[in-house]
Image (cartoon, rainbow, N blue to C red; front, side, top):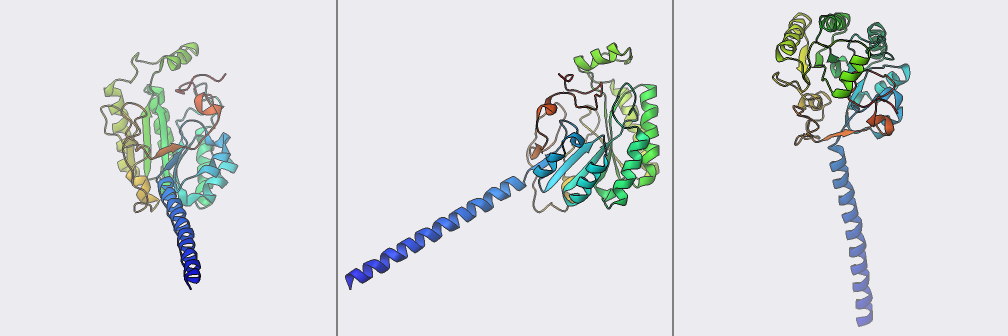
Length: 281
């Protein structure tokens, strides 16, 4: 009898132990999943049109930034539309010596129309004019971009003004292109003028203006609560902390780069002369 009771006890202990381990592993997997899902993907280190494999690394929420809406990229974006806030960058300099291999603004506008026709929600789109060169020509091109996109129903327009890194200054000098300031940031008066012009457009065409890390001007981070709310994830993703990437940037620490490879640390094939990365090697 004692032997039978001992067998039963051993069986019960084994049964409890095995199921406890299974339950513990299950809880750990669920907790890990919750942590991972707090991340928000972004493509700000290079051009995603050249790295479509990044779509294999999407999180539940992602900020996709591109100057190059190719047909393949459009299909990938539409396929994953429930997970994406799209920043379409168009400065008006595409096809010039400033952005030699970037599509023209007319081409970008046409591709954007195709994207919307294929079902990507306009509410999840941001027109990104980044950077604006604060010359009369640069401001004129900014205005042309806004007027070109004003009939799309765009609700958000982001901008930043050219930051003059030393290697960027050299590229401009090598091209014989004059910039009317020698400081890192353009004068605040010039940047406020640009902000005011865009706000006037915003009132006329019913869109919000968002400055990106511009000192002296109220700014909105590339990743903000607005993006989480638009994607319907406010009960799932809690933005925390500050990524601290650069001065005046207030993006949450949840932001995670999803691009990979050497092109994330050097100029991409768009070859924009204002790129903050060093030249291609």
